[in-house]
Length: 324
Ligand SMILES: *Cc1c(COP(=O)(O)O)cnc(C)c1O
Image (cartoon, rainbow, N blue to C red):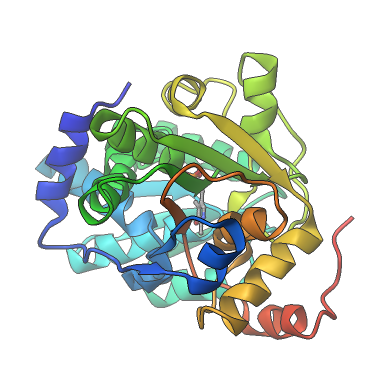
């Protein structure tokens, strides 16, 4: 498991590169559940998501030789964008493998950062296979989106910031896909405050970590179209880090329907004044749906804001195309 000392080291390393994001109180959600509720606004991070933390930490850990051999990754969009950004600020070029499910706005944003974009297959798993080919054939260095101790430690710095700002935190709600975010945050929060609960939240359509935890081992789950597109993809049948950490550290996993996620996106825009993507809305959505009984002051990770503007408008008008 990744420990709190590695997360503290990542925080030191990232100091000059990553801004601490705001933790703001939501009057509306606090009133709804009867405990103070705070939003950790990672949508304010450069590149629009928390993924910049892990990607930057991983890059800063590479040797000169590893940097020279080239960087490659697979991504549902935000990790690729973060790695492309981190690479360009250090004069490096990254190759980002994306499946056809990644929304157009995310693909374009990655291209604009000067990365090599390679679109392949119909799922995150297909994109990951392409990465393995680049590693095998070109000797490039893979920077995985979640199952890597450097990535987990980078994402875990969010947990340290929450503890500093809210030392009596009781519950932390974390969007859950591959589990790098949840594993890192849970490791940091539980080291500092063991009694706090950390709850993972996924969409019902293709919840790979939840299915794997239920099965007691990593399992494959069909990747489906969902409003929470950044939560799509498997955890890898050969998962080394995040599965065990999520199994040991998460107190619960909650699943949401598409309409509940849409309601979370609308609440964020109308009440909190934040434009956020589906994956980032699941914590708010779980509270609105009455699926969380928070224990003490509650922090919700609002993980990113990279939603296609057309889709956001359709969700606001409740005229979006429903998946499934
Ligand atoms: C990647 C991502 C997640 C999930 O992170 P994992 O480490 O894969 O669990 C949640 N929200 C957003 C916006 C993301 O980009």
